[in-house]
Length: 164
Image 1: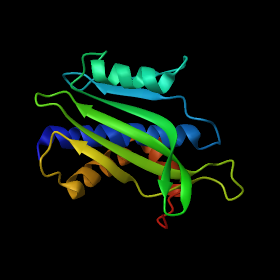
Image 2 (image 1 turned 60 degrees about the horizontal axis):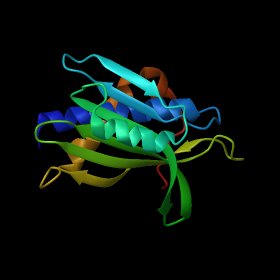
Image 3 (image 1 turned 90 degrees about the vertical axis):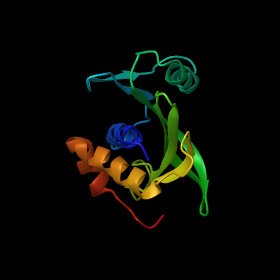
Image 4 (image 1 turned 45 degrees about the horizontal axis):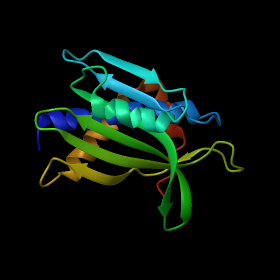
């Protein structure tokens, strides 16, 4: 697997952690578009208009900031064995060439629930542009990204629940 895709997974982890940090107090996540430009400069937009998720997907597809990679984080639901579950959906793109992407879900229990915030194990949904994805390497890079956001990693780790 290319080193660049690991960097994309790392960026995905950083912004996923930022998303968990944002919902840690029970708030609803405002969709996040994070990006990394040539040279490593990072930026982030909060998408606070109309259909923010759709606008974020359009911005991610169009590479609005001219980045080498970008990440969209939205609040949604996924189906797990236990039923419908809140989750941050993370779409990360390496613009390439070749263009590659990874989509993950980070299931969680909202802080507003009686039991409080819980962050469950991320789930890979889709990897494109790579014939044989190395999920272990992608996962390792993702968690390195989570850990690189010190404030957010503290919230993530304090509420980690490996049961799901």
